[in-house]
Length: 620
Image (tube, rainbow, N blue to C red):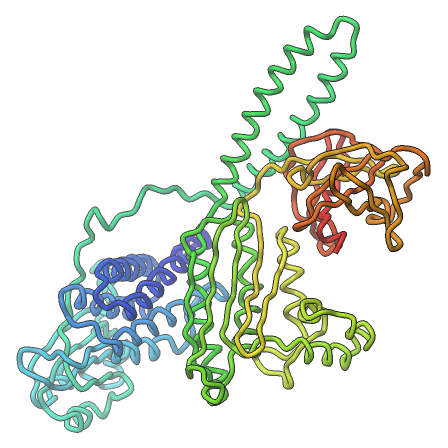
């Protein structure tokens, strides 16, 4: 198989397993949901067809059997939780095999036996062939059965009470010129009215190749895919090409910003006013076109969250099983579309948070019962949009975070001193979980306890241009939120000077700019404040926030930017206001990824780097 074809298969395969898992979970809650049943069938049907392009017989057989059962449900067979549970296991196993293909390009060595075991469990318990209830037999002879002296047809013929028989090929026959008569390519399915013990005795010589269940289920042919099964037309483009297009668009924004200086220079010429007016008209047109192009490229980069969310149910189930806990897990907001870079960078942080919620948040069943809670914990992963931001939330109904215990552990581990711990309020104490090396685990397990995780989570989210928030109530549970940009958008930035440096402030946070005379500035508790109309506002020097010297005359009026910081207004003293610009602000990376108080950077028209400040973080 070619690398390109395999990569494409893995992308589509994860999307389809995620869709099938979501549909089966919904079907378990509402068994009569025909739309979910049809959607789950289409996902498995399409995945089975894609597997046919590769030499993956174990996966193909398993998906074919799952498709048969889903089609039987579509034809009226009652929806039973036991069958849905096995179908979920099939989807989970397929997802694991996709992981194995991504790692090594092949299925694990036990794929055939795993496939056969799941296929044997797929037969529904309440259906039988026309001959009545009996034993379902699925016999998959080894390819070298003839050399081992086995005659599969004779063996199945010797089974007592044989009531139904179906022969099929394990792999497509292909060209007759390539036919090998010495290799067995059969799959034998049969129903016997004899007892399970009698059937086992008849097939005892090949028991490692046989799957038996108590009752029979006829194999239904896959339903034809109708036009309604086919989604809208799409075109797949390599992500690198989209990233390159985004980079070019951002460079175009920077070049466009340089026109402002050029127009100002022309206007300063003796006879340049008329030419400058024409240039300003063209500049405005270019501004609109570049903004539209930037927005269009941003939309092309959007991808739904469903495939990402679809990877977590299996991992949550496996982690909960490892910890001996029962968890009701659900995802909401999978239809929301977010920039591809955000989606690509979210898997590890979300997985860390979900595992922490399972390990440290949700209690063991006996502890939950003692606390008057249901034995099964509740864990929710959700996403919602708020303007140009998307908010991810992981919520559990577990024990919550105890600020007092967090303080004690932080001091015991030498991360802070006792005086600092006592000075922290509860929100500040909870925030200590993001310190490097902090852990509440008493022992090291496969899930947690190594002192890494939550600091890496915050670093990853900061690198994506977002922030992390935590809320918790002891005994009731916790909610951890990631607040991230939906897509790459043009940010209007005010450029200010501080000493010899220039910085950017998000224009949406700026309320106004004013000149404040020295006699209106008064000292307050070691700081300064000034009166703006009927309000008294705190005044801070930008140089103090960014550690840059400002040479301010005590008696001179000051240039002040009045900004919105949270729910308050604050005056920020700057040396000068340089101008405004549209900018594609990119998150910091590398050594500056965790730089405090910096939301990102962009380039000025002269090629200089402009740091865009996060006033809320600088003033916190």
